[in-house]
Length: 416
Ligand code: SF4
Image (cartoon, rainbow, N blue to C red; front, top):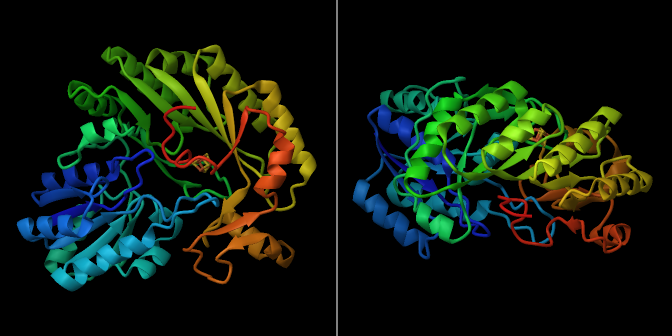
């Protein structure tokens, strides 16, 4: 089939290359499909670009990658779906093309997105191992589920095709290439769309080869696209060992969670070029062991010369101000390079935190945003501590930054 893959993401502070489409394109090509990636990130005229490419290749089906529903932050929230919906309407009405949506955003609410956007099919989860069977069903005219659950076969080959993606421009504008060592996350953070998603590891040697292709083209700075790097200590160590043995001199940034680490892991991370770790921390019902792990991760990063930024989500139901004060003192004592605090919790209808909040009418008063829309596709937040109150607690201590006050900081963090 002739397949057009579209990246509609025009967020550019910094721009993020559509890595999912690259894996998808390579898998489609291997199965004999004719594929083209249309990356609209830097497009000034998206409809003329769509019309030009559609005219050139006459696609039978389009795949649209949706990275985020909105910017997730309360301040100056940007909602992305309306412009994507217009693209889908254009493709369907003008060209009669069926549209499949996929990407990280579908993990939040695949049914809701499919309905909102009016697409034909949605693949929730990794699409590269299921896309070919979906296309086969469509080619044969067989009945196809509208929502297909994607998965990644552990250690399966993970080819990547970046034709059509202008990486030089991405790097020029502050974006960098990403790589991933696994899919999914076994943690159960109540506010996270990745929580309890199936974990499947990639072969570290394949990931290293993936990186090598970019290095040979002159790109040497990377960011990690895993939900969190340290899903499994042994696998993280295996990957770092393989990367070190490759002899490639790269610099990269990683996302981590408290847990699954060792002193050795930080030493090999540093040896492979990690210069910044973003640590995800929240205050919801935590035990002393969690704070102990948080402390040790910060300590190990710092003692190995790796910068560390904490993304701290707080202000959950039933928390009091004493807990916030305790957390701020905790971070003041540990002195990571920066702590980004967010007290606005984005709700989606399938999240555990949403069920907790909807189960207690007392909490409804803390909903801000589109509270009258049950779908929760348009931004809805839970907030008990607003930014003015937070500013008072922080008391101009420069180690803290209120999330959302700088555009793009929660997207692809490349520096503190
Ligand atoms: S550890 Fe990170 S990715 Fe995993 S569920 Fe928690 S916030 Fe999400």
